[in-house]
Image (tube, rainbow, N blue to C red; front, side, top):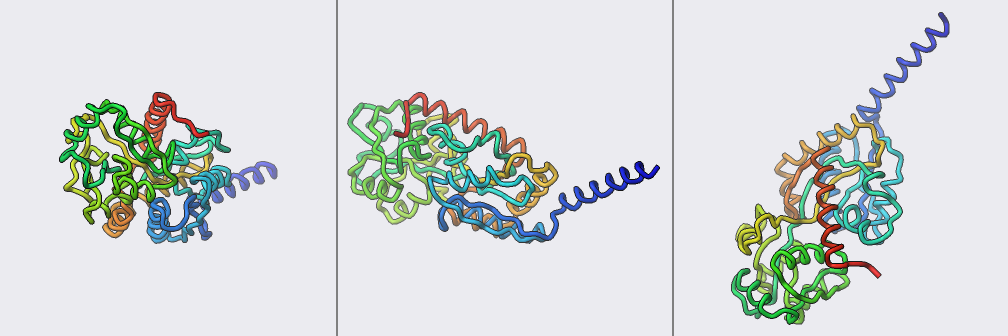
Length: 321
């Protein structure tokens, strides 16, 4: 009888501990941001951290761990204790694309679990103001009629901008030369000057130059367009490329093995956060469209992204030396 009582007591204590864990004891959480302050993932991660702190009634502390194109912080999160107290401000570069191009110290499918997507970064097709095409159909016709004559810039070989441009080039039937740069800022300088014909770069990198009259915009990569640039037509319709819909995602992930009740609680908090007008305004200010997906829907989306980018990398023989 004594053994039975001890066993029952242990079960009661274990159940209480799990219940306490599912409701988050009074201990700060951290969200690892694998980029420096001011970058889009950092801005989105800080918005999420601040807002869900109030929803959870518990502090969520941003922890910037930049380096190696987001790989250092992502690896740290992937190898952290799966107790619900470590979150990752995840993004398409280190989670979806880099593992397809090089050996990385973690497996994004095995080591990380999706919580919720929060935003998409649209890409805009731009040229310098002297480029001789008044709309995207004229742009495609001109470049298509001169195979090998034109080139395009990106923020680096294998960067999301490079792959988005290759998806566009393939769909439009363009034969062009890729010119990689070390970042989007120098790439934009040469597109503005006409040194390079065009680029498909993030809204954050291109829109200020479009609004100032230094770049011409021909279309945006999201099929639904963007509330941030309603005057720029989607490439899917303007260029007659049905189904063309691509952007860089930013979301929240946790180490695999994190208890499901904690993942669900985080996802619910983020969902509530995404409905707040203040959050939407701050996400827009980072150059992102709000795009909330949780749990299995986010997981399916990540799988689709991996397949899509793996195909374009293989088709164009893209590799990092």
